[in-house]
Amino acid sequence: MKGLRIALPGGTLFESACSLLNAAGVARLDPARFERELSVRDKDDVYVKVRPTDVPVYVEMGGCECGIVGKDVLWESSRECYELADLGFGGCRLVLAAPRDSALARGVWPQSLRVATKYPVSARRFFAARSLNVVVIRLHGSVELAPLTGLADCVLDITATGRTLAANNLVEVVEAGTSTARLIANHAALKTRNESVGALAAALRRAAAERLTAGAA
Amino acid sequence: MTGLDALPPGASVRGRADGFADYLVGPASRRRLITDRFIETFEAWGYGFMVTPLIEPLDTIAAGVGGAQQSALFRFMDSDGALLALVGERTVSVARVVATQLHEGPFPLRLCYAGSVLRNRALNAGRRRESLQAGCELIGADGLAADAECIALAAAALERGGVEHIQVDVGHADFIPGLLDSAGLDATAREEVLAALARRDLVAVESALEGTDAADAERRLLLAFPTLRGGREILDTAAGGLRGERPNRALEELAQLWDLLDAHAITDRVHLDLGAVRDWDYYTGPTFEVFSVDSGFALGSGGRYDALLSRFGVPLPATGFVLHVDRCHDSIVRRTGALPERTVLHVSWERDAHADALELARDLRRRGVACACDLAAGGDGGVQVSTSGVRWSHGGHEEHGSIDAAVFALGSGTP
Image 1 (cartoon, rainbow over the protein chains, first blue to last red):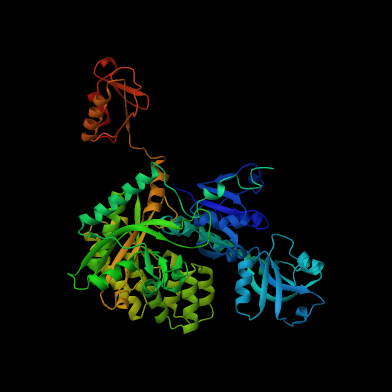
Image 2: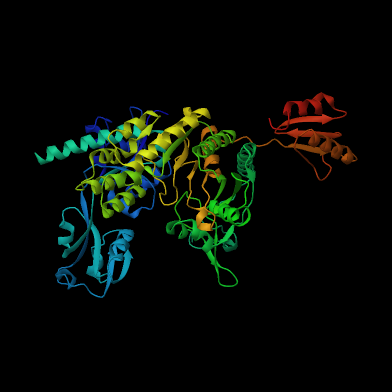
């Protein structure tokens, strides 16, 4: 077994993940190929495109040696993987947002709060440090509708541009965390495939740093 | 209505708790065989087999393991209201036995065990909550020779159990904490780095070190952390520029340990791993993990835990390890595919030949051939023996081949 099996996240991070691997000289991936093939072989490595939340599962269980996934997914995952590098792309923030005309939007915290979120683990951690009576309502999509319908008082959600929040009359109250794409690795693979995994991490770090400098210039 | 709308009648009594498994014919005996081979190897190295209970008082367990592990136990109440738990590992039980019944030695004590351990952790596809562990404890010996013996024994047992291409990663529990001490970090930064390392979040390690005034040599090592692996030569690389006494002593111990492992003739399977992330509150000296390319998990792990026995009132140094039987079984199956099952001969007999058939069965079993005898007449000529399409006759119809030929073909009964 020479190459690595690498899990890539479907969705918004997918094309950037492919282009970073290409820029790093690790692979020559055409994102369109994944629409026809379940797994794509490139050089000695095999790439699979899976749901972002499944990336840590593949990596922890040893189905893939490495994976690329957003930090926001890792916050919610109880999977034990090594987080090797910050890849810089896919930047977004986890924020608490409330309706524009609410007391919370003016910075006044009520005694009890109903929070709609797709990030229940992060929500519990965020509120653990605050003495509030919080009810976390776990939803699977369109959390910004929850305050509109009275289901919740506020939302804890990911935002990249803030446009969706604004369009739904929500304003940011406080930032709970910032997220970017990460390279993760399986525990045993880090030991048994140390050279391959180390080379992948080094190449991706270099490419991510170059991108950062190019972006700043 | 589809079958998913409601449970079928009787389903509620046919359920099995999530995270637990049934092992059917084949995997169950293979799992037992692996365990037997581990124990045989332990005993061949002079380790005495002992059995501890599946349940311990929570207080006993709490004396040995940290809060995170305690919260992952199945806990319940005894008839007098005291809290009990199903054991999550068995070293603490062995420590309790040593402290209460074997504290007079003779030392060093060499003990081994095998049994179920249980973890009440979040249900996640593929993760077991009950698993089978076999382990050894070497108690009352403080030298590195004891650590080397445990590492060599773990490797020998895994190989005897049928696990191929193992790799042993040896680290030291005092190296990274010592490195953080000598880096001159303040307590907050130190805790932050240790917590990030424990989470295996190297991105957070990096950002925790940023903006601190960690000394260069230490910072370089902490950032190079996952690549601090290799043979004896990495010890010299690591020692360059390192001032602190603690990390240097850890490196010195690893150098001596390497030479001892060389004397055990296993350094071709050993890597030194200075970045090993282990439970730094529990381990006090050399630590190790065993891997195979066939498994995404460590197959075995262990190390020196000199502080544990003193919590039971007997300050004795100790080192030991545990092997994960289920992960070993998975990794063997992954390499070899479906495992061959033991061949069982089927003995059938026609009317009046029952006694002959039973006599033949006794004879076969004496020769080590497994066989099951029909419970009712049904053969078509004396006594017949068959296995997966091949048929031999006993007496009379010799054209099918003789029983002796069958026994010969089956060898000792495990073809």
